[in-house]
Each structure stands twice: as C-alpha cells, then as structure tokens.
Amino acid sequence: MIKVSILMPAFNAERFIRNALASIPKTDEIEIIVVNDGSTDKTAAIAKEFDVKLIDRKKNMGVGYSRKEALAAAQGEYIMFFDSDDTLNTENFKKVVEMLDGTDIVYYDMINNNGEIYHLNDYYKTKVVGMVKFIRREYANKFDYPALPRYEDVTFNEMLQSLPHTEKFSNLIVVNYNNPRYDSTSAKWLRGEL
Image (cartoon, rainbow, N blue to C red):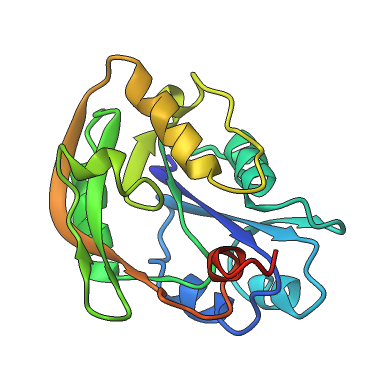
C-alpha cells in the first residue's frame, strides 16, 4: 500500500532536482510523481534516473496546474507537495510518516538557507501555507486544486481550513527550504521580472 504520494512540479530544475529526489527515502510506501512542466533543460532526463512516475508536459503551464495534475495521479493515502529545489531531512520525514494515522492534516516544520525555522503551530498554519504538511488524499480531493499562476498554495490552504478536519503538529523539521534564492520564480516575481 502506498502511504505517501510526493508531488513535485519541476521547471528547468536540472541544478537541483537530483538532490531533491535523492533525499526521498526509497520504500514501497512512497510514490514520487514528478511533473516536468515544459522544461528546456535536462530535468526530465534526471528524473528518469529515479523511480518516479513522470508526467512530461511539453508546454509550461505553471506550478498550480502541475500540482493539480500530480494530485489527480496520486495513489497514496497521504499527499505531500515538494519543490524540486528543496531537500528532505530524511530521518525526520520517516518519523512523521510513522505518525500518519488517518488525521486529515499533519504539519511539519522547515528550515531555510539562513537557518530560520518555520515552526508550524495553530497560528502559523494560516501564515506559512506551502510545503509544510501531509494531507490525507481523501480530504484533499474534497477541493479542486486551483490552477493559478501564483499563490495557488494560499488559496488551497484556505480551502483546506474551510471545512471541519482533524490535524496535528509534529514539531519536526522535515524540509530544507532552498530560500532565499535569487533565481527562484517567487524572487523574480517580487522584483517585477515576471
């Protein structure tokens, strides 16, 4: 049985994706779905080196559409959104997977390149909305993932919080968040380059 589907959009991620994929434990309980979102570099070829389900799109559609497509293909009891330029703290990831017990949302913490820890709690679950949780797939599928060009994770998180659900906080750092990063899409957008 697949316990967790890791959903990874990737666009021109050849510099990072190998490290991201290598940080994911290789077990029968973990399914990795990579959506190659019209990359013009070696992203798809690198993804094929790993045991992943590859959705290889020729046209760039954006992260929202990619996550929506990956979610539709997922088979795991839980889903986790994971960016192609981040890495997992593998041991903490395994510990949180062991905590997945039917709870709708299980939050974890992440740390950025400056050593800043995003500690998820009842307050920050609405402020830090991206890759900080495992979501029971049956609960995630109550909502239509928004295929927006930006801030789709904010909209989706608002949807997740809108219905009664069960949740818990692991207090474990699971994701090494590759931020700040000058060449990231969000950084370019904030500088007005997109």
